[in-house]
Image (cartoon, rainbow, N blue to C red; front, side):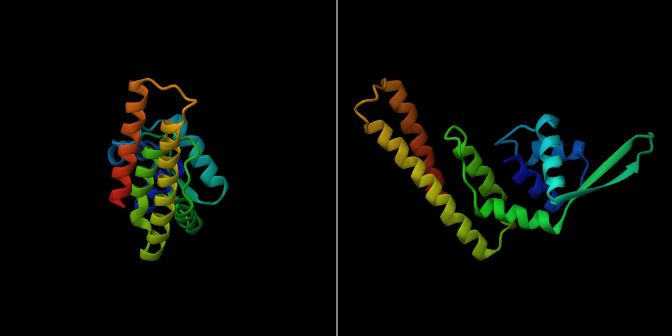
Length: 163
């Protein structure tokens, strides 16, 4: 998910890692918290596959600074990541779907429609799994557990309606 976020930001701004961290915290405050422990490895992966590049320069304080930018391949990769969005972890699916939706303004109309259909399908499949789990007579859930799953289902419904 951090690759989508990083590419999304670099699609709008050329920036240093420090500023990238600040922008993530400012733009994505509702969804995630940045850390250099997640940003640095993601940037290295993106650099390795040709999606980002950087220019080095010396700051006035004598420090070496890298300014990152997105490449043409990076823009394509961002589009591909959004169009093929899948969340493998049910725990994160709603939040990751929100992040992908938040970043979808980089897509053109036909790409957005494809993205939207894929996202709807992903969310609806997850909702079906939750509903099946609630109806499974072999799973003994407490009332609090049932209500927690129902709240998650309601949140999925709201996200589906928003699309």
